[in-house]
Length: 267
Length: 282
Image (cartoon, rainbow over all chains, first blue to last red; front, side, top):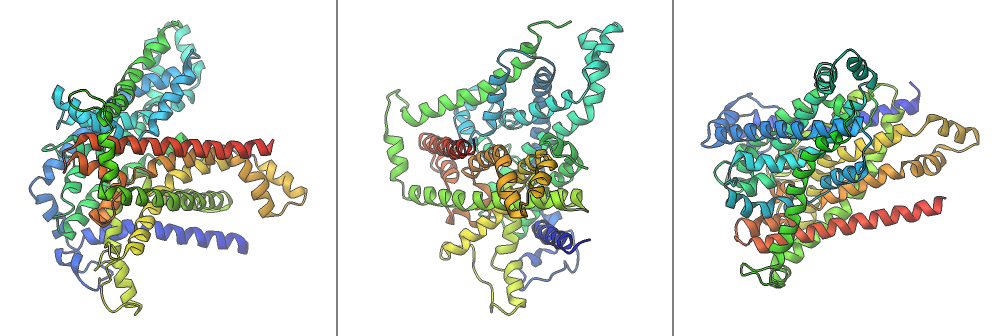
């Protein structure tokens, strides 16, 4: 490597270390014994390594229910966003129709909409129709957040599948639905799965709407957020770690699709 | 085979959904902020919001965060995108690490940085082992506003630079290599190539990254609460408090409208600033 290249590489390594430090340290805080959270000065290695803090967190009243709530809401979000998003993505990819640009603008605009505007009026409205403090209510708002992504991702997915394959299926006697189900759907499945995983993570991570729209059926983020002030440090760290771990694993698993959604070539 | 109404049928469910969950709540929020339970129009909720002790502080804090964090993030992300473009090895590894925060909840990010900056946290421990402090220093209290602000800025930069990075990187990759080669042939040095080729061609990506990031920056909330609790009021946090603790959804709605107004204003400013430049280019 040339000196300039070596310098760039060194810089990239330094940035990467800075980027990994917070994740490493919250893991370190969560995987140590309970006293370690307030120990002074800190040991730089969890000695002894222990699951005490995490066990305390998971065993605490309400935590397990909150995790369950989060998972249910995220699964609902995932299903709704793909059911609504995939057909729209297919339409964008395969048809030229009037109002297409307007539709794209609507989709992109929703992405830049303050969540507070969305969630606050829904509180009263959800109370009136019995959706307040339910999994479905929170999932509806989360779907609104995840839907623009689902639409844009699935549209780029379908665009990448050659139209000729579908047309060949039609000439061989398939109708549009059969052609879609037998030819396009199997090819699009991995990408759609990635879009679904992303919707899951969006919902799993969301704090504001989940906090305002629930009272007893708290999701994990809402539960943690509501208990920030009274909970001890080690409890908060364990919660943060518990929140981070699945998201990072999921995002890592689907990163190729995410990058291609933003148009980043991964050579 | 091509039914003329098919695309509309496919799009319709999502349109209905988005209208129900975006356009309609927007109207509802406006009504909440300006209308009493009895149906009279009033400005008293707005006055109540503006007259609140925390209003000025929350507005100032939020604006300061946006003005400091967003430019830093754009510069950092631009640098990172250009680095990725030049790197000969390990690009995918670096990109994967740099985009980890994409999947991290703002609450979790705040808690991770809390582990670092809290009194008995890793930052103070590091300072201690370097002999710079004698004991725990409280960085995250209102007695130490500058330090608190810096901590929030660092956490926000870590958390949300990745989204700017992916948008800018896509833009950088879309610029044909030949342009740089041509500029180099005509004797442009690396700085000139960056100023005269990369930056102008990157303008659309910069624009969308700036708009998206600015709008999201106005919504900063959970990171701040995880780090500082109520010691560092921000606009969304005030909306949350009015909705929950003070049980007044009218004032909360006024805050929500204010945030929307600020986001729209910022978007227009960014669009305008970049359009002026575009005219100068032509």
